[in-house]
Amino acid sequence: MAEVVKLLGAWSSPFVFRVIWALKIKGIPYEFIEEDVTNKSPLLLKNNPVLKKIPVLLHGGKPVCESMIIVEYIDEIWPQNPLLPNDPYERALARFWVKFTEDKCSSVWQISLAQGEELEKRVKETVDLLQTVEENGLGEKKFFGGDNVGIADIAFGAVIHWLKIMEEIVGIKVFEAHKFPRLHEWIENFKQLPAVKENLPDWDWIVSYFKSYREKRLASA
Image (cartoon, rainbow, N blue to C red):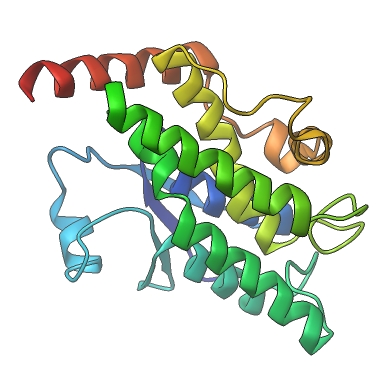
């Protein structure tokens, strides 16, 4: 009997969708347990007592935390449709771009609550991030690793999709096609994958959610 897979998450989280995409690419059935991030459940606190945040993957009752660590775990447990290449150098490159994304993408999330000079600063940081990946990350490849989707695509795909949400709620344009043509072609290829296309948050709902979140946070600041 297969071990039960459960995912603790929230529909607003880009980090949760990374895990969803990986599970869907692998064809792994799972139970989604929705968490209220403002009122964390005993189940979440029990299974992630250190960081106390989503996502958490429960596999056979054992918790795995942090989105990209979970994605690598999924890739090791279920080898079909591999997300990491076999070649050690190519694998190192994929992990490099995941780490680069994790280290540099905080400016994207901070756009949602920024205004004035702070917003200008976060936009500049985000443009620098996009420019670096545009010039060095993809080359002429369809995905970061070549013809097949991999962990770097999953990591950066969440950043780009949520950046477009931030643009909508703040009323700015950062990710423009004429400035980042390779990245634009790449994200369109990524979002055409059935595992991604069929598993994106409802646009109207998520824009409304983050608009409300931004208004409340700015009003209380």
